[in-house]
Image (tube, rainbow, N blue to C red; front, side):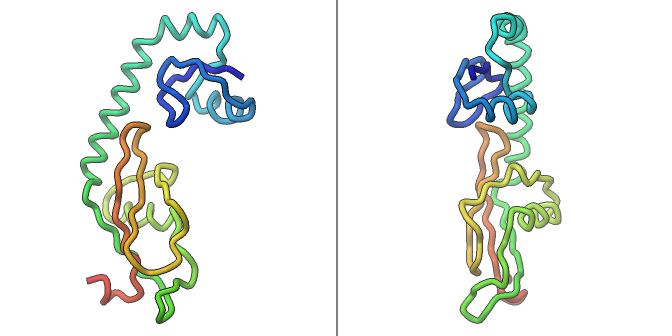
Length: 152
């Protein structure tokens, strides 16, 4: 299936690119999320007529994401979890835990924007990526400790 991208998508293309994607990805994600249009002749004409509006909206979204990223820059989260003496957690730290901790710190970050390289199952310091926009990605430090006294 060929689609016209309405916004920049990592590892796929930029605004206005006509790319070939798998049918399910286009039909179930890109088109319903308003990230792309089917690449028909009429849609190509409609896109070219509205191109400047779409690019302006994307620029505004990027600017808003950069403002949020400035506020989150340098933020360090400390999570207290039950763990064994060796530092293995009784459970794991998930994206939901990080989103809740950021919300408690006064930062509104949707869970879909938080990207973890793997699960956190031991105490220690970790970095977590937050994708505010396709072009605005920041790192947040997460410190997982066993006791509240270790947090200080």
